[in-house]
Image 1 (spheres, rainbow, N blue to C red):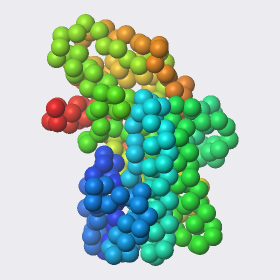
Image 2 (image 1 turned 90 degrees about the vertical axis):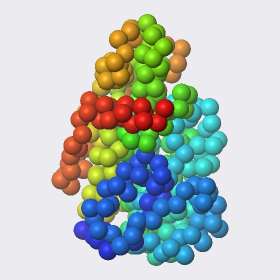
Image 3 (image 1 turned 90 degrees about the horizontal axis):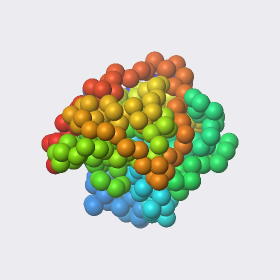
Length: 311
């Protein structure tokens, strides 16, 4: 089935974040009647009463649920209660109140970390809940799995056209470059830049460097999400990825090349590796006629420029 966004009032929850802002940029080509967004300071999505009031007052036709508390391995491992509670409450409130307000279609953004740690590669959508999660981000994963099942059950019980998508590891303009709580790409960009500026001879990389990861630019992700919103309607989630992966060591070398750091990489095996490999199957997304446009080297170059503009 096809769903047109033309002339629709669309709410991008989390519109100030990296993915949300990319979705807003992409939506301009769809000619919506309005694109709504509101900051977390103005609306706390963990608060059911406030969320209900805002949705019923603004009456969106479609919702992209991109709001989330996110972070890398360190943040997930250090603040598991916050990651579980915040993401669980936001998902429940937005999904439930969207249903009550008569939203026509909702797309919930999950994460590739919801899949079992040792899932067969590439990871197909039906791998969900077939094995233990990666312990370092299990709290975040449980919250996201709950959002997926909320969409599935609201579809089954109420007939709501609510769907969920699982983006892979994302990076791009507006990323979080925090020295401790960032994801791998922005964290490495920051540390490589600081090592170059300080004239350091080595750069420490967390873990062994052997885990393999898949990466997708946020603007490619936004394009895929809009495509999915328009052309997908099913209870099962759909993966959003690039279809290729690489080792963390090779990623670090590419980032050093982009940044201009020429020192030696030192791998800190005292830090956790996380899941050994996480490559998602893109068969369902490819069948819908979508593929990425931004190669990793170009995307990293733009990400480094974004970082330089904000430090």
